Amino acid sequence: MAQHRRRLLLSTPVLAAVLVLSACGGGNNADSESGASGSVRVDGSSTVYPLSAIAAEDFQIANPGVQVTVGNSGTGGGFEKFCRGETDANNASRPIKDSEAESCAANGIDYGQLVVAIDALTVVVNKDNDFASCLTTDQLAAIWGPGSTISNWNQVDPSFPDEPMPLFGPGTDSGTFDYFTDVINGEEGSSRTDFTPSEDDNVVVQGVAGSKGGLGYFGYTYFEENSDKLKALEIDSGAGCVAPSEATARDGSYTPLSRPLFVYPSVQALADPTVAAFFQYYVDNDAEIAKGALYIPLSDADQAKLVTDFEALLAQTGTQ
Image (cartoon, rainbow, N blue to C red; front, side, top):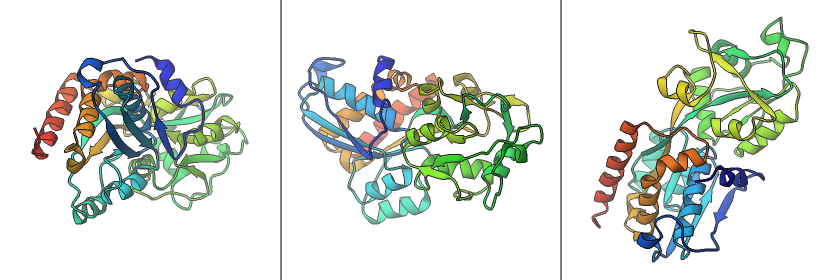
């Protein structure tokens, strides 16, 4: 799976919902899947969006009779649609909340949780920032905590220059917002409000890239895609400064900002052979999809668990 596809997907701001269509046949698994037809609807996390969008694009090359819609309304916004039965699966950058699970149950929506990749949530500054290379988790909490009045870099560290610090981050429907506020500020959703929010991570990229003193955070893949204009900060959670990377996310040293990424398909949707075929393709090609999206692939053990979890989910449909 070529990385140029990942660049194409993020070359313009991602719309609230994107219909990824293929105009040609052939491709991977064409012999076994080329007869599929119908539609698949996925929404949710903008962080997980690139993974599902690449899976959709490749699946449709092999199955030109299928239309896979991939949206990015945010983890929370996506679960609202999913639990109303409006989508077949939800992308999520955090586990489902109890309130969301209750909503799904009330509407008769059964689901499974599939871990599809690993992310290193990345704190970024402008490429021209030559004074900050590492922040502690306490400094991040001081910057992003509710009621914070920090607006200049020299308020964070007296050795930093007198440089305004405009802040950019995910909106409140984002699982990344939920995760970051939980592990940094100590409570999910607990955050200052005077920053520029967006469910579209590309808007955060543009904000930090356009502000010399800008600071923001989002999934690792968006930094990788924009490393020519952004700089990733190392994070010190008490054991020294650690940079986000595949190695540090997997070995646990990039704490507390490494995390799993999820897809939640519904059991009811998987009873549709087209939906089941799409997610079978997703699971079978998960490592290649993760690499193509510039995310961190699962370990062998976690990949085996993904296969087992999906087989158990299919078994619940009663169609296998």
